[in-house]
Amino acid sequence: MKKYVFKVLLLIFIVVMSLSEINAQTFNRAVKTSENFEPAIPHPNQDKEVSKKLKDLEKITGKKPNIVWIVVDDMGYGDPGCYGGGAAIGAATPNMDKIAAEGLKLTSCYSQQTCTPTRAAILTGRLPVRSGLTRPILSGDKITANPWEDEISLPKLLGNAGYNTLLTGKWHVGEVEGMRPHDIGFDEFYGYYSAPKEISQGVDSHRYPDLTMNEDYMNTFNEIKTNTHLIHGFKNGGTEEVSEVKSLDDMGRVDQVLADFTIAKIKELATSDKPFFLEHAFLKVHADNQDNPDYRGLSKAKYQYKNAVAEVDMHIGNIMKALDDAGVLENTFVYITSDNGPQMDAWPDGGYTPFRGAKGTTFEGGVRIPGIAYWKGMISPDRESDDVFDLMDLFGTSLRLAGVSTDKLPNDKFYDFIDQTSFLLLDDGKSNRESVYFWWGNKLMAVRMREYKQHIKVIKPQAPHMWIDYATIQDVGLAPWTFNLYIDPKEEMPVGHRRTSWVATLGAQLKAHAATFKKYPPKNIGL
Image 1 (cartoon, rainbow, N blue to C red):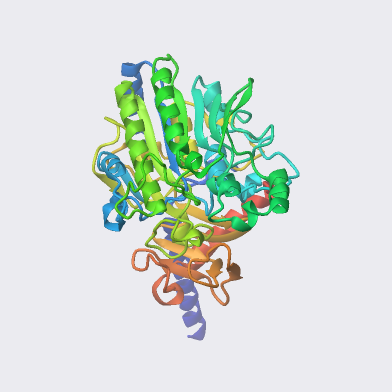
Image 2 (cartoon, rainbow, N blue to C red):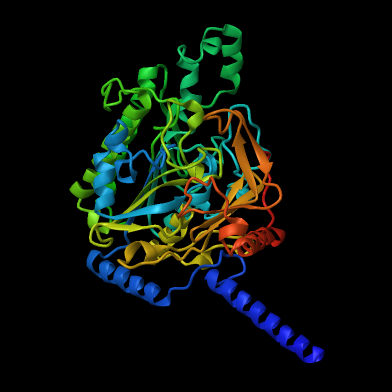
């Protein structure tokens, strides 16, 4: 009898374990199709449908679509009106709101936790820890290797596929020769190498009197400071310093100058028989925000940050109008986003997020950002989705739109992007991404799958708003911090052993991701 009971119990155990394994496999829908690519959720019918949709359009236009990215610097999830901000918090954003209403608004769009890593990730399709670009390169930094030397950038791939490629605005991914935008694949660059604070601090006696009013300090600063000039550079051509920021009024007008250039280039590029890839990267709303003297008090709030939000929205409206006036709106994919969450350390010169954390952290406030996809006639209006999207997926989506095969990518590197073309373009499109991974430097911090997010390390501020300057990285302790973002979007109440069955599944996903670094080790460039 005992032997029989044992066999029954053993059989029950095997069945339960098998069901658990099936359940786990069902929970993780992603399928690995190549060793060096992030697994994706297969949607064969969806993929087939979008291929037909793109081919039908190309028969009409006679060429591949234009690709336009509009990247706002440090804009919080809750800043645009279409994400709950706008006029309600003192800075109306009618243009972003209109574009979101006429396209697809993503509510689970993710960036890296600060600017340089995001900008590197979207142009390489790889996590920053893989390329070595894990944080901003700041004044005085001396990197030990050029991370771009063995990376194949998106503008290089698109250029080889017959695209004109242009970056207007902020770069912040290296300013030495070999690391500039026009060195890594862009045909043309018109903008600034660094962030606003690094450009303006040498002429800002209000914020930095201890620097600007001390001759010895200024002499030292001038030896290590970033280039403060507007740069016009060309691939295989010259690099010109157009003008220098010599006053706060100069700094305040920077985004107007950049928007004017982009608008003029759209008119020019639209007449070419080649499609174009344009990344317009605003310097605002990154601290330190300086009022444009031609638009002082542009927002109802009147604060400099809010005025910057209103000005950026105005320029976005003008860029979209330029695309329409040039007659290319029906053949142009547009994506509007931010490079990370708001920089709360600069408050009140910082944005708003309804989530926990801010720029510099891997809590939702640091990495969940606005994401608006627009394509007249190709993306239906009034769409909204909470399916996950990583900004790295712009890399894969852009390759698909341009007809560039991933066979062009080397097999000695791991690629983290997912092709999300079918998700973005189809009315009932579903995300092809199962997991989003969050890193801080070379530390793996967290993963999101569906509505669940699990942290194994966290960043904790030691004072209000101090998510960068006065914060520490901590291990989570006895158990991972697991949150259900649908019932707890602020990540305040872990549900691990009480209200979720997926703790082990999420943990296994983190381990599988970490294992990719054994065969494809990360680069160290001295940051």
